[in-house]
Structure formats: structure tokens, C-alpha cells
Image (tube, rainbow, N blue to C red):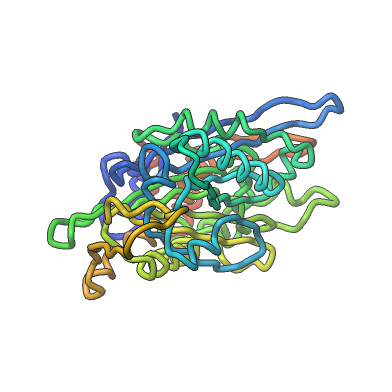
Length: 377
């Protein structure tokens, strides 16, 4: 296993991570991947997949969460976001995949969830949340290789333990700051005095220009040569072409508008690593809260008198710590995604992985005092 950022002595802020330093530090949250690898009859490489995030075990449609959405830059696609904006509810797992597989994954989530519902004749509908980034350099994206069985496999693989990072699941063919990108995760746990809640982040990182890359505040990108950048090859799109999608989870009892405010803070974590300034990047963020248990499932056939629910919410005077946790977790998750991803070749393109030696050398040049210790370790 490749080292994560924290293994090198990088801290990314002032708050402490949870035991796994992953989105699965939020109780009940599970993550699963399905990798799709192969080669077409025409000789095209297939390197793609699906990653799913389950807010709670079982059907999210039967136990929805409050949620919110933020779009930093809309050069991307997603499903299910309008219903979150309207109702403030997340009623499906969240899936990450490639740009041209969004519809397939959405349809698969509906079909698979429908099988879990009571077969009592009630009406059923769902609007699953699927987010995408473009893997068309390393993957045969126009081959439409993601199918319903791959979504089922990702759901079947979902666990609440350590999360595999790097070139896995939806992140299999992604590129970040001209290095190999993909899936990364991190978390922050607040102290008892701050509420004791956890905020976790998972990203699919496929964005950024190398010279803008920052790690723990140090401008390492300007000290990294670009001779191995896949974007230097003739006829390739310009550097930074891609996107990043982020899912934030917390067990703090937040209402929908507060989840939206939490999602906005993913922008800060992205900016701290040098991203968020490209026109051609779709930067789409979703945040959900599991802090209010037993929210009612959508009433497909409303009967009886109107009902009211007793809800809890974090007082806004104490929400700033959650915002800080979100920013720090997203920042670290992006770097974890890059460090976990190996050098990858596909369809005539070679994308270098960000190795420890390259990073620590650049950190040393940028003035990071821990670079020598990290190299020796």
C-alpha cells in the first residue's frame, strides 16, 4: 500500500481525523467500488468503474437523510440534485462514475432499490444522485462499459471500514493536477467541547493544473517538472480539463439549508490544493447529515391527517467548526487520492503517479520543514 498524506507528516489544518481518516468514520456510512478493466476488440483500453456511498445500511429511500448541494462550477453533469434542492432530502445512495455512464448508473440504482421495497402494490419513484467526471483519455468512455451488474457489485462491496483509494471504482481513469487521480477520502472529528461530531469527505479528483498544486499550503506544483504531463502530447486537451465531485457526510444534526452551507465549504478545501479556477471543470458537491434519525420515507400514497416531525439542529453559533472540518477533510482527501494512484497507461497516454520522492522533494524546495523527516522515514 502506498502511504497516505498523513503518513508523511502532513497535517492539513488544526482538527484531528477520525480513526480511519475516511468518510466511513461517520457512523453508518458505507463505501463500495467496482473496477472495470479490459480491452475492446478494437484495441481500446477500458479503465473505469463505479463508486457508491451509502448514508445508512439498507435502502436510503426508506430512511432518507437531510442533504444539500453546492455547484462551484457547472461544467459537469449530475442527477437527483434538483430534488435535494427542493425537498432537502437524499433518498438514494450517491454514485460516482464517468461522464457517459451517468444515465446507466441512475437507472441501475432505481432498479436495484426497487427490488428492496415492500411488494405491496404501492407506487414507487426515486431520483438517484449520480455524479461524474471525465475519464476519456485513459478509458474507452464511448464504449459505455458500465452496466447494471457493475452498480450492483459496487453496492454489494459497500463496507463501513477502510476505504480503498486511488485508481479504483469511478476514479479508475481519472487525472488530477496532471498526475494520476481518482478516489480519496479523509475525516475530521470534533472535540467533545465542539460537539463530538464527525465530518467525512470522499472525492473523485479529475481536475487541476500541475503548477497550481499546493500541499499543506506549500506551492509544490511550481517545483515539479511537467515533462511527463499527459497533456503535453499533441492534440490532447489543455491541462486542467476535467472535474471534481465531492460527497460530505456528518452525524451532526443539520437541517437541509445547513447541509447546503456545509457543501459550500468543499470549495475551500479544493482551493487550498490549487483547484477551482478552471472554466472546463465541473465542481459539484453534495453534503448529507445522518444526525436526524427516522425521517419519514416519501409518502407515495398520503393518507390520514398531516403529521409533524420532531427534529434537531446544530445552533448556528456552533456550526463554524463543522465548516472547518469539511474544508480540511476535502483538502486532505484530494492529496490522498493522488498519492494512492499509480502511474497508469491507456489508449496511448501515460499518466504519472505522484510518488513520495517527487512530492517530498518539491515540499523541501517550497520550504516545508518536515520534508527531510518524511524522506528519511
